[in-house]
Length: 452
Image (cartoon, rainbow, N blue to C red):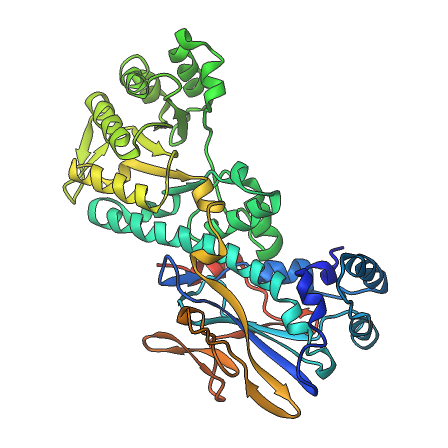
């Protein structure tokens, strides 16, 4: 069982006695203060609540463990406060968390979640939970946002040149091996699956099932890797490809073959000549995967070579769609390179239907809290029976100016707006209260909220 008392920053342990006398409630909010994109796709809080907050999460043994470590570490320890939680609340955390429904797209500089203590004796608990709570939100939300923005870009080109209904499988998650941990693979991988249905990150399937009740949230296809090509030897490259088609090519299916272990353009020629009949006889669609070189140039040339041999048809929008074969670019993929590839092949007359993208580190790992400038700040406190505004206003960085009062989120005809609680219906829902998960969303509900 996780020890929530040890899920914080060191300096947090000294703060229980730093508030004004007679403080009884501390109210904080989480927001994206800006960043790379002008809106975020909220995701991941429910999983954190289920894993770390629900049910009794504080025991005397945990208090003993934490006290020994933290005092040896050089920080004071609020044993009295934690024992109070065990004694008076049975080990449940006396806080209430509100949040926008997961999958919701919210403009930056708006409140996404709030937290406050529900027991006056535990005013110190709100800010103590900042480290864990902010981390639980910024990472999956940033991944979901990055994936969502890629989806918008690809969908725009599909609407102009091809079939928009194919969008769900246009960006495949290759990031499992490139993240810092198995847990990161699950969290980030599921965040991607909010927007797409293609993944090679198995842990993402388990995460979506475990915390959001999904059955099978994503899908993959048989695929070669360099070792399964090169183990045949360079002189037997054709034999390795032919074996792949024989073993995995089925009518209506897909086989993915990395084809640049030696020479990607020569391999495209081989696929279109010596191996063409194998593909046609199998009834499968071949996906040729380059893995090096300038992505836009390589993809365009691969399409040109493959079109020469397999032919193409012009769709209703006037763009060429290759017969029996597609190209998957999985190296060097980010928002900029996706745009470059799509722009380049569109100029050459090819539909976006012809390409699929695979993204690894840039999807799940090359993100940080400052991409969307996430922060959790205290905005109000109840001191001696009176609510006071709490805020920061640094003269050298107005972008870090924080909000005042019991701020929340409201839904308007034009979108979302942040304001102080006024008795009107809020866009935030109670998701956790005093140890209990109040709102349990399904993965389908999350996906529906994120629909473009």
